[in-house]
Length: 209
Image (cartoon, rainbow, N blue to C red; front, side):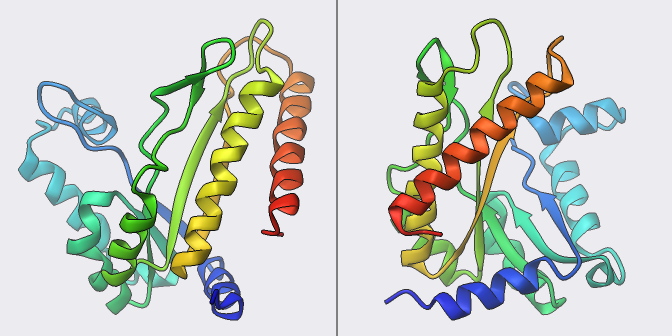
């Protein structure tokens, strides 16, 4: 039985102050991802030690709870940091999508990660995570996006949100419309409206809204 009152209370508490996105993807020295690239840009060797030092520096910032009420963690940090953040009075969450390695439509990116999601949500919930985040990306370009591409990504968002509800975890949906390109602000507006309308219509049909 889904406890919607508890989910609603958690969602309200999450947005009391800001939400810190501390879920930068973590790679290796040979294949650096977001967190390593940020260290490299600051002329800091992207070693495992320095990656951990950066995470801890952010986590243990004095009076952090005065500025944020929730934090999104990278999956590998949940076991280490969720209870510490909770002890600071900050609601821990986790990014659970597996990136945009899938393809759909006219070679449009499809966010993946539904396989095994229910089990992962149970695991992270047991470790203290109260919410989860899933990001999709929609590019704007020549003949892009297609409605088929949007539909496929919004279907994953709805399926993810349903799995979160069943696990007693608040779903944070991030249907990002990319700003890259030479499109106009009107095209950005129209695409954002198209994406959000599609998401809410699918959510409504599924019984989520």
